[in-house]
Image 1 (cartoon, rainbow, N blue to C red):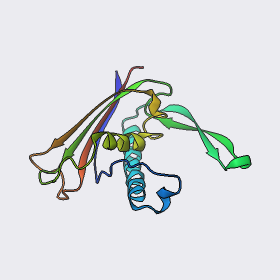
Image 2 (cartoon, rainbow, N blue to C red):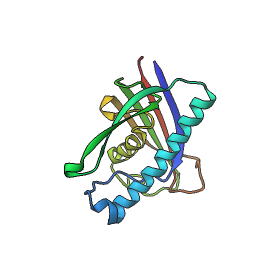
Image 3 (cartoon, rainbow, N blue to C red):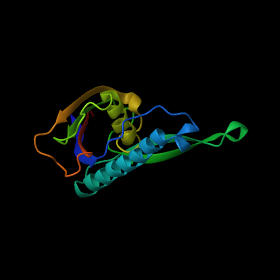
Length: 163
């Protein structure tokens, strides 16, 4: 069994449905996308540090990206290196640890928090979330805070896979 486990402090913004144009001007989608950018950066920093200092192996993935619209649409393939091997089923366990003073604790659906973490891990930890075979998630209120900011959540994530 192989895996990568880490924790980050982040002001979690749960996933919200968005339209193609709404994500550019509606406040909730804009807030979610900014949170995603920040969380993805934290994940990238962790992967970079872990694999630079631990000398762990990264695996090649071919990512296909659409460029243009209509008749000008075409696809470009790029190779990137990620911790989880391509086309490998994986499991994830996510724990959301909340500040003792966070009220209400159940401010959103747990599945929207999971989606936010999985979106941030896409093309940073794994190439395609269709290979995720199992998810375990917990929302936990702490007795002692991890941060002075009661809006920050300590997110502990563990990805595991067989090789």
